[in-house]
Length: 330
Image 1 (cartoon, rainbow, N blue to C red):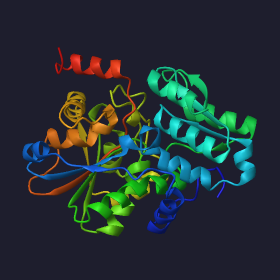
Image 2 (tube, rainbow, N blue to C red):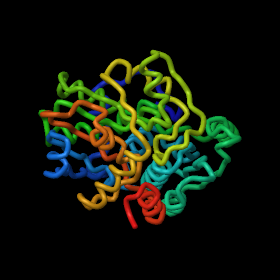
Image 3 (cartoon, helix red, strand yellow):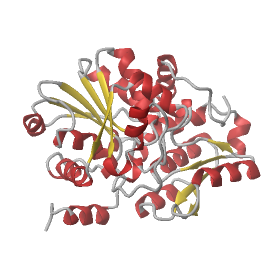
Image 4 (tube, rainbow, N blue to C red):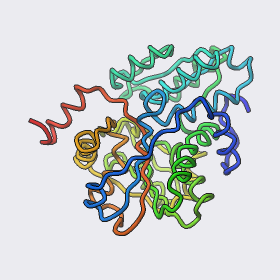
């Protein structure tokens, strides 16, 4: 497989192969529970803590797996991607481990902590204005000019397969889940997760969750055709994507049972609960699935529910500002 977008389709064997590549490289992250959360929701809730993953998010799984599939020559020439931060960090670390220089096209308004961390992992940033420029166009142009392999943040089966390994681990620890809630941006995590869930427990329902301010995936799911959104204004920057990918979308249609949207206030309240009550540092995007439970956007009563807390990369001052803005701190 080259660095170009892989052929359409994703099956469980690819996820299991990714799990073998990641063994001893990615962390096996813990699954946490909370009696208070169970009482609040009327459910048994199991949180897969990918905020403890290397680089602070699940993205390391997909980035490392996809880069592992490149030839030595492709890795030597280098890799390029576009990302608001988590995929940038993941691919930069994967490049350091596998000997590949990495260039990232990143919005100039990205979280400063994510910019700093990406540079610390060895990534080279190319900043752009998301209001006036298109990151995919910039990335494609630079890839052609410099002979770099493109590993996009979600629209690549190697990435999708790697992301699905988090759900494999979750089901190994908690096999009898009734429902899996996954944040949805470009669809890499939910596509891999849904394939794994349906293979391991066909009766488990999978619901994607996204901010109401960035509801393109929900509209796409309902319409059966990809819908787009331009530079959505949501605190959950990890799902601030313009559209689902042409590879992730058919996998989602086949394996995901429903979609739900949550409010900005709900995202911040869920994030605050995780910080204050469970002592889990989670970024706004990581709190999106929990917001669906706390806002009762899904039927949870009496169910065993798995959530992937997808990341913990957030500037502490920004988090404190969000808590103040939504009346959750003095």
